[in-house]
Picture 1 (cartoon, rainbow, N blue to C red):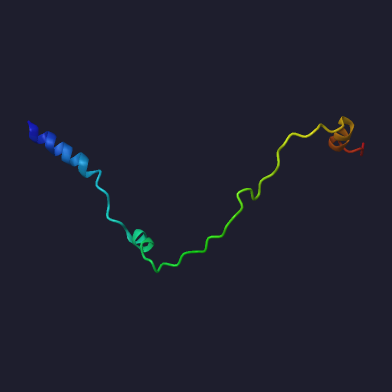
Picture 2 (tube, rainbow, N blue to C red):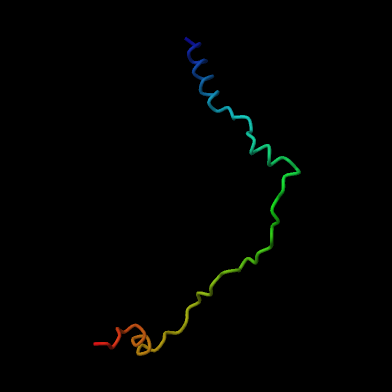
Length: 71
């Protein structure tokens, strides 16, 4: 009765076994592998200021978004 339980446990545990590392993992461990240079980048590079601003005069905004006067 205990033998099937042991076999089932062994089968489940064997599914958790890791594969040996492949060629890609071994290439990373090679100290002679060329590595691209890493440059320093500012933390705030490419950010835009999104602080609140005062509203614009409504007439100017309406003129900008109004349809053209070709009619």
